Image 1: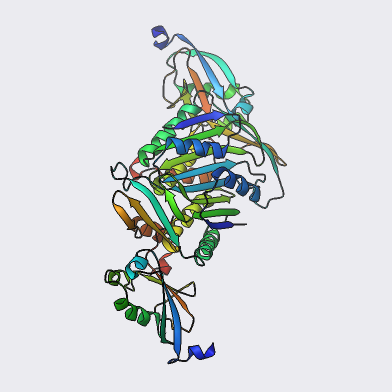
Image 2: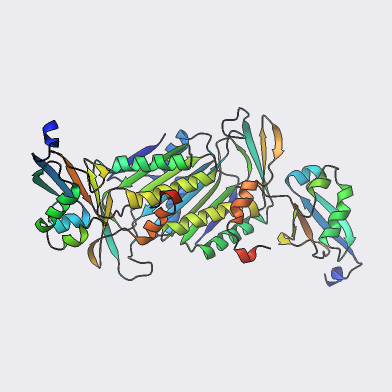
Amino acid sequence: MAASLVPGCAAMIKARFFAQLAEDAGCDTLELEFKAGVTARKLLDELEPRIAAPGIDTLRHDVVLLSINQVMAEWDAELSDGDEVGFLPPFSGG
Amino acid sequence: MAASLVPGCAAMIKARFFAQLAEDAGCDTLELEFKAGVTARKLLDELEPRIAAPGIDTLRHDVVLLSINQVMAEWDAELSDGDEVGFLPPFSGG
Amino acid sequence: MNVIRIQTDDFDVGAEYDALRQRALGAGAIVQFVGLVRDRYQAGDAEKIDYIELQHYDGMTQRLCEEIVDDAQQRFPFVAATVVHRVGRLSADQQIVLVTVASQHRGNAFNAAQFIMDYLKTRATLWKKEVGSRGEQWVGMKQSDRAAAARWVEPEQIN
Amino acid sequence: MNVIRIQTDDFDVGAEYDALRQRALGAGAIVQFVGLVRDRYQAGDAEKIDYIELQHYDGMTQRLCEEIVDDAQQRFPFVAATVVHRVGRLSADQQIVLVTVASQHRGNAFNAAQFIMDYLKTRATLWKKEVGSRGEQWVGMKQSDRAAAARWVEPEQIN
């Protein structure tokens, strides 16, 4: 696993989408290959063109929260091989 | 009943005591004869010597609330024949 | 529609909840408060309360409670409320009072329930005597209850 | 001891109350909140909501709810709490969420229950879709919920 932390090595990242974001993306989950050490923010920038057009609005950093491996995280966190990244639109439970 | 409103006529007043006040007074209820038109404040002043000594402290106007015929009232209200006057120590329900 | 009862009998929280829910179909929020007889004078205290005796002014209490609930409904519009206050002898851990409020949104239900409790404690003809290891004593109005009730008074009402 | 559950099944308010009361003997106050599916988009509106769909991030929600309850207990010490949040499809008038808090005195129970609700709505991985006469739409975070949650933030935490 240490190798996956070296920038430049290939890393499989699982992106998860919820609620409106999942509908915009047309799926709940995407498996993507990136270079290890990519930040979540960069991952988001690269994802935008891949998901449906209406999603671009809702994927903004200031609206969507981020989790890495099911823990709330910051947009400049670096991603490693096997990470699960959750894109969390504004919550509306209760 | 109109006669009972004329100051100077005899009026039977029922005084009711609750909680600590009833223990101080040694009873729940006292039937008293006063002159109609007496104020509740005057009734209280006249009652003080009649009830047990410890009661004098708790019978102060600023601590005890007053009801006349089961409606909250002011100390300068005038009393009529047949009125029921409640001396209400600080509440502690709930 | 509001239901207010003063009674010696115990109440069933689940049944009261179900009944209110039926009277308030379409409501989005129900807040329920239950007051219980604490078994200590103070939390962690060794001295125990065995029971309380709740006295009231029969003939005034029901109407005062109705006025309190009406006042709450004016301030914090809600769909329906239930208030049940017990009187008589209640031993430690028994239920004393139930306040349940159903409203469209939770803010009014929480505010109305708190308002009703604060006013029940400071403006209704109810008196509590504690009996336990400290003997028998009538409980005076608590300063904390007086302060809690005072927060609902509009500035222009203070004088 | 606190109990937190995320489930599709309905919950029994009376049974949850009884269970909490047993876990919190000696407490003097129990506050219970239930959120229900409203049958209208707005009160008095002709347009009706048929059902909601509650999605969540399985694996995060339980832990986030536990953290919210722990946070509430730090701020407003209480004896015990129960939180049950349902997920899946819930039709109008069904129960969505239960928050029950038992404490020594009513202030902490009311505050903790409100804090937990405000945070459940704004900080837990739960999303609600309304389905009704307006079609299907995911509900964004309400400004009123954001404001309600913001009141618990200490001034020094705002930045």
